[in-house]
Length: 466
Image (cartoon, rainbow, N blue to C red; front, top):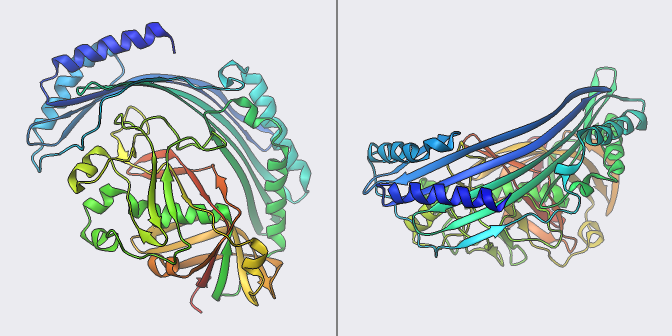
């Protein structure tokens, strides 16, 4: 990002905003560069670099709704503003009210250790080849592997008709190791992943243990027996607990869903008790101690400063996540949660880094009095629908007489969210982030962080009805 480029974009955006007939207009220009390397088995499947530039215009018509337009040619900017305004005027409906936000001017440059843009593509290929070889060499039962590296530097230039001007560099790195172990007709998978924002290529070095763990998990699952269905006390590790709070609770906290759904409004009323006083849940877009959570930026895609938002305090619902529009509709404060995948999309209310706060119970104390239970780790997918959920753990173990016992598989946790949160009986003192994640919503996929300590839940249905 050069000063000349930022100045040129600012001048172009300022002229287009001044010419806009809409009472409110915002313009976002993005420049994106990146690389992607994929090994499948011993074969290099992809090694490519990408460059992209484009823009997004959104206008609000008097007494109407949003109109949008996208473009790749900057010379079309003023024409695209006119098109967006015409679209906004053509949309009948309830007038949109935006919550007030003070205009800001900010330039945020990424502070990378080892700038991945300066690392030769061949070096990235060698790194991924090495991870792939480790998976194939770790155990003879591993027959299929995939190792993936991808990086992206997205520079966002944002201006609106209320005087905000923001330039922000948003770096992102993904690293995946996926192994499949085979025994006869039985195929089991192990995977490890890391997503880092605001960090350099150094986070990808020294990750050999990640590849070995993926292969070992796949091999271990071949020996694991299917879990016996029943109702158990369950301890979930920080990774799975983070996914659980994101999927089952976080989406219900997104105010666009709440504002448009009467059932959600009733279920997510402020002051409702969701759990015991040990339960505290928050969502944050501000820098964490590690500095690399993928949901962390200085501003969202409406120019609102990101901050930490408390959702549940001592078991009681106290907050939710907003765009300027939903905050205006519900007469609450904007939280900096309007995020867009890229310049082809409008901002939606999206989580950033969602987490259960640390409690006071050690892991040993959490399992010590469990005669028969399940210890479930990581997520292999799931689904939610308002108050119900179903999640599959990536791997799991039985708990017998207070000790971790044999591995089991096919562990599916299902239940009602509101009952399950009431059944959280212990929250660990061992908080950890799981910063590898993507969240899909309305066709957009966004990097997000998730975190939690270990959590114990009573009376969880596993693998079917008890």
